[in-house]
Amino acid sequence: MIKIAENFVKSFGLNVKIEDWNGSLGNYNREKDIISLNIQRIRKIYSHHRDQIPYIKSTKDYIILITCHELGHRDDEQELKPVSVYFDHITEGDEEKLFLVEEYCNEIMDKVLTRCVEREVTAWELGKSYVNPDRIEDYNVMNEKYIKEKRQSYLRDTDEIINLKIKMLHLKIQKEVELEQFNKAMNVKGN
Image (cartoon, rainbow, N blue to C red; front, side, top):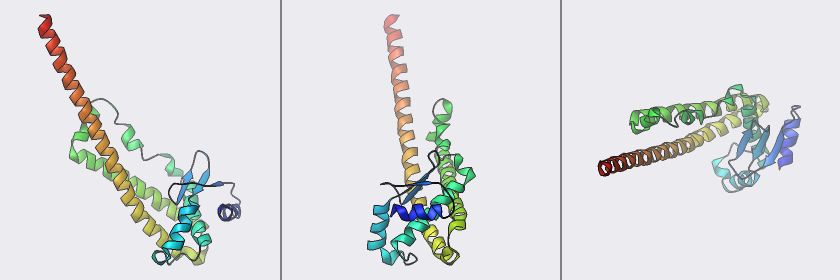
């Protein structure tokens, strides 16, 4: 099944490595220039949920349409900025205490979701250039469904990350208060 994607990519004169993996249906690793496809999951979805994906004609067809989307990620020059950048700048100092403000968390959530969805829509659009013209409508339906599902996944993941940051911040504040109380107690004993 990997051969299907390899031959498809080579038909465009591209030298992109294709590999099987156990993650989502597809992934593009920019650093290694590798498209990873979860062949087992693709087969399972096609064979057990065919009624939910009537726009897919065969397993081969499914692999090719997913590969087109991943090639779209490959062609996206703006994807160099990872989503994690919205969290990375808040690691220490007073700025991290903003996570205790609900509006700030909502703003971070909105930024992350917007960027994630933009990445997927851009990959969808760029990937169209690889799709056979008679399959564009099916490719569009597949991506619309995928992006809705991906948005929900990003929403859950981002919410978990924000909640972890809030918990860590609460622990840090608690430790700071305990340390301050300990230091005060030691100063009282010392006097």
